[in-house]
Length: 206
Image (cartoon, rainbow, N blue to C red; front, top):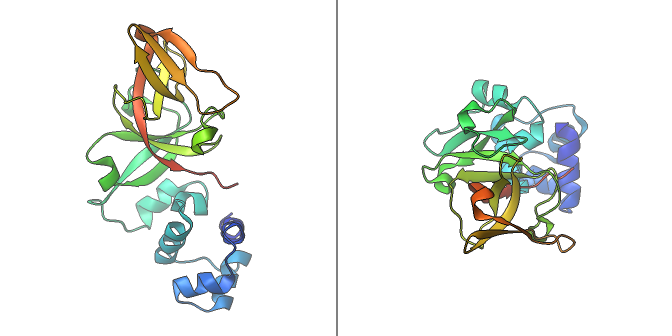
């Protein structure tokens, strides 16, 4: 998994193995061994590679990252917070009681600013106009109000939450997708439950 993703990310960004070797301060052959699976980078090298490609260490390594983080990855808890990755969420569902947790990822405290948050795995293509695609992950801070330009995690009654912009007019709410093939949806405002606001998008590169 790690070897495949390193190779794919490097080719997508049109970089050479020497470019990555220079980044890590190692020989080209040593880096090449990472892409063939003969060797694995240490934790510090993983951090550098994840930052360089703009992905999480979780994405590079694959699943079971929570155990790896707990046992091996040194990070400053003052600067990062470990938050759950969820597949779905319903209106009014307390985050600390959700059982469908797929894993955990680290988020910079400067982005969270003390707010509670979770990561939601995107399902569907309603926000592709904002470069948010099926399978991506979005970092969401919990709040029950958003501005019209915010991308919100919103649910209608007790349905599973989705991503939309929300505009309120009198006693009605308009849920606005950014997919040109989809039309805005109109609902009574009292049927709309805003769960949070998206503050970061993490792309699925597969």
